[in-house]
Length: 314
Image 1 (tube, rainbow, N blue to C red):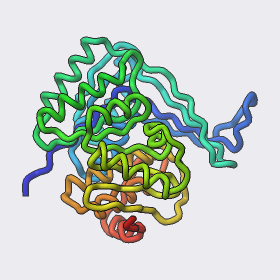
Image 2 (cartoon, one colour):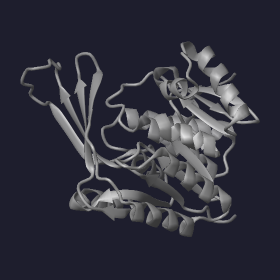
Image 3 (spheres, rainbow, N blue to C red):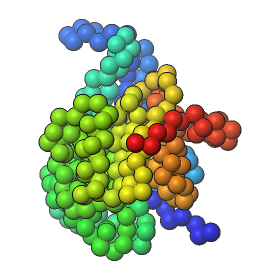
Image 4 (cartoon, rainbow, N blue to C red):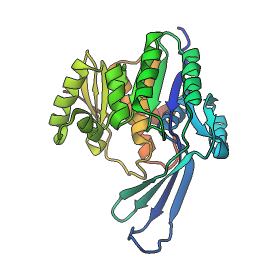
């Protein structure tokens, strides 16, 4: 059996994720933080980290602010991620999540990151094409940095697919729309991103399934739709599955959708069936929801959790 090709994740606008917990969030008042977590993040970095924890080889790329790159470089070294980021001037942004432990609601504060130049955009495109091989997965994930238009995402996708690489997109708004127009092999919107993409209102699993089914048939060969507590839909030309984890003790939702995509792609690397990939994806997301730090079960615990995932053919 041939060795799987390393997966390349592309994070155009990474972030340092800082999650703080307060007993009750009251605007305009002073709060005492009960718990705090700070780590290298951004959707592509999150995907890469979970892939590496599962045993996959991963190359991480995108744009990284040179002024505070150390936190990322330490993270890459710790997890065995190959660093291929283009360094740009300035600081990588920080994303702050304030978790109200009384209501279990999360308030997000997303700062603005550095703006790459046109020359740096060209350098990234050239670098990714050098990494491209027939059948290799590239994951373009997250938001766009300042000054970068959605058309750049479309250009990357068309160039990569033009040399036989496979591309997955996990983004929202204009970037997701541009990616769908350009043509991708896999997309992983959540239910809100799907509704925005299609310009429709979606309520309940049935309406989400109908919309996802139409999008997959017309535009995207493989589609994953994450729906929070309602589970996730996995759609291909061969089958459509609704997959749910058992009731969880949710500690943090940071990176859960990214973990879902990571688990699915790892299953693809291992040659698993759609159901196998969906189970692995769900266990990966499940494990992320129960921990502030990315972790994956191993051995008997992994086997047991894979069995406990509920799979329904739609």
